[in-house]
Image (cartoon, rainbow, N blue to C red; front, side, top):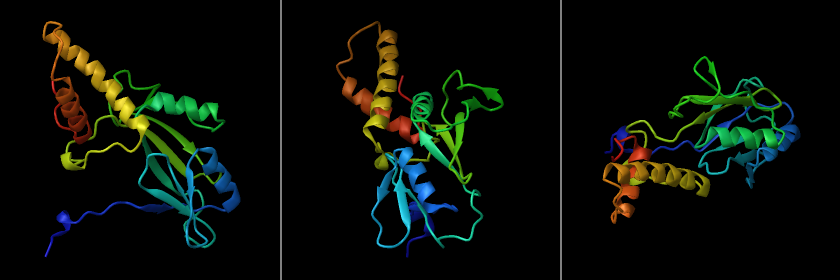
Length: 194
């Protein structure tokens, strides 16, 4: 028999309490989330690049509308914030801790912004570029979207440029291996190659 630590469990859906289903549909469409086909009266949306979805609808939950609080992970919070504002989505300012603006070092898990749906369900945007150790297994490393992979490659390119400078400016013929190691270690939270 397997013990619980050996059984994969993935969050599939979280339920949002809303008062007006059509108004919620318009809001989540406005975020650019995909409306999925469901076999019931439940409305389901999935954020771009996410493997988890949201549900809402008549009689789906007895929770108080607006009581939901969830986190959305993004790889570039500044670009995400600008895109939300450009799309007419009300989103609060970027902050880190008690300070305004993005974290000057752009450390993972530090910079945030908040937005809310029409019922007041809160979404906390959080910039994550390097996962905490053990958060992602090395054999499960993947990128949910082209955008996430492109952002990771940009970070790897900057780090690799520094690597080549430390090595006297010599061209690194093993750059594909270096990039691969960097990308996997960044996702898994392991120490990055130098």
